[in-house]
Image (cartoon, rainbow, N blue to C red; front, side, top):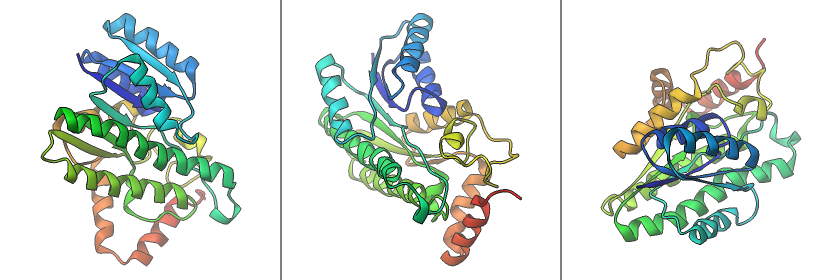
Length: 259
């Protein structure tokens, strides 16, 4: 029986991915800050699907959190066959007025923890000759994003990094998929204080379940980049054919508060 490790599993896309993996008979290691929500999910999944679920309550924005999680799974004697780096958050507002501590936490979570976890588990997957990783980026990865400058930049890193290492392990029996959802119905917008952004206000957003199902299928197929939604796919690719100055201005208009 295979085991999947999913970060950011206490809600949204991570929660739905945990259900999907459990439905297919996979054991789980669930990681998030909210240990209470993880325990709730653990009870539900073990009862409904008869799988083993381990929970790790950890803030992945802390220094060396990825190494700490790796050591915990080693103590548990659990082999990770699927790694899903889903945890992440954004912040809405002008960079000059932003809170540095929050920005630093965002970089630690969106970049450092994801990279460290990938490094630790990828080595084991390569040595076994099998395994799958999915790193959750965003359609934000394809352009710069005024009013969410650091968030967009972190997701550009995730896309570039994941594409590169997928190429590196393409002959090792391991695949690395980058999931790029657009705005999704989850707690992300509230956490980023962007409910008034034109990007989301008054919009019917895809559900976390729909995005999770799409990402799960792409990961199982070993797809390199998975952009959820036809319009998101078109827009993400269209920016390659436009002057960068235009792209930044358009992104700013979409991110500004709705009139």
